[in-house]
Length: 155
Image 1: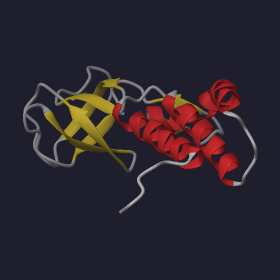
Image 2: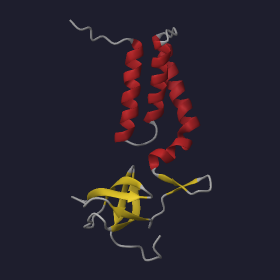
Image 3: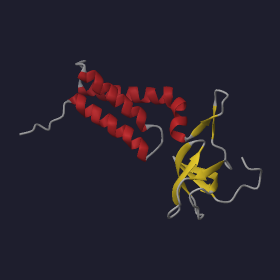
Image 4: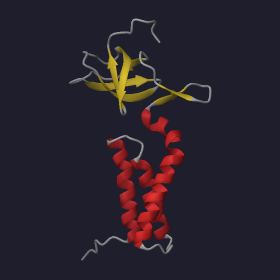
């Protein structure tokens, strides 16, 4: 018979992986840091560092909060779709930025290519693969685009 019991190290590792994966479904750039904290606790327990359960929970909270405060602003561009400006900094993708539809939009959703990166996108317009589109907003990791160019000069 297979023993399905979890060791504390494997339980913390599982919690860490689930928290990191949850960031993909609900991007807020928060859960990933608590997932990393859980993975660190799992690693410490795997290395036989003696930590009692109340201290594990306290360490989880402290590590997660510390990672969040120290690294969130540095890692946010990876999750939020910011682009490198070439000057060492980064900017949020400006509205009116031109992209190219990679797929036909079915029921208002499709894929676009922006600066060489594929993005999921939404639009109320009829858009076919190969059509140019323009950025009008963003919802998490999904771009909102339109088939109508902005009234200002094209970017």
